[in-house]
Length: 470
Image (cartoon, rainbow, N blue to C red; front, side, top):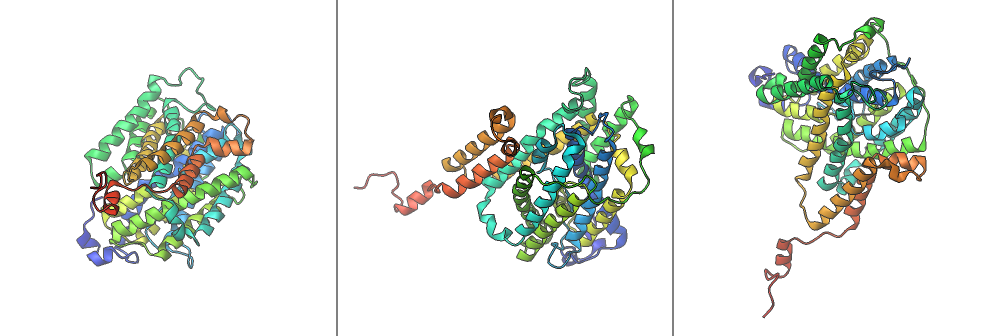
């Protein structure tokens, strides 16, 4: 979308979160925010339902539960966004922060639900609620804790999230996940890959050869192209749309709630990492949109809202929420800092979340088409981690920390059988790869002494480092 600043307001107004642009412009800007995050927001629900065994291609009678999870992903992304933009006392940054379902928790959630069907959902929801409450409490201490998370640690964690997720994209593009149909003759067929490949190709074309809203919505447009192709070749089934209700409110305790040690610990640890990501997003919004640093109140309010939004979502059967980084970039691109614009987008999400037919339409997307979009999205998560790591001073100390954390974390993720004799709770936490990598990186970074650079050695020795004294 091309934004003409003269018609929107003065430069000072555009940098003011409390400024309301003309409604004729504010509505399309709000919809643009929804388009930028829509696919990423509903994808985790599809992945978790699929991993549990009642998602795409499943013969389970609980398949409609995936439609419900998609519906709740939209609804509670909107609710959490309103908490951020409007605020409740000290809760909420009152900035244009778009909330959505977090990718970061997927490596923790998959082992908890894998192949267990609907029976695994109460434990998952218990973990989400506990993690949300813990995340909320982090708001009181988030600023002092930032010292323990330099780019070496945060970049590694984001990279590990991407690495943990890329196999999901490949399996989807090939035709499903093992719990669904990897043994079927068509798994990995050229037909499946043609659908995924078209999505990737169209996404790249729109991302790099267009501007404005077309570029911002590249993944969505890629999925639409793949969907059209799948429809032409007879791979789209509309059977579930007619069965879905026109309107349905969220249901408290839809899946039930049960607390397990592994789920609670896993979600609480990941909440800490998610809170740090939110701090980065808040800082990015104020820097990119208003040219200033975020205040302590804004960072604290955003962290409170993140946790509250996640806890509320868990009560209704939705997945954890967090701030969405792609919308941070969108604010920098449009130059419009208004929180009211994002509030309009949140209202559209809430409306869509109350209409199950929207979720039913999304569920008609063939898994191979979704796989093409997921490959792009999860690859970008890993790339974001690499970008963060580019700020690291790569001394031998930092290289050893990175090497140890990556080797152990990725190794346990690739070879979960190595922990066959470990108690089940510890096994779930360790085989995610993410938590052991984060623990090793944070611990070693705090314990290992800093190395002196050549310049520091020269300064200490009066510029004679490496020379023999006369």
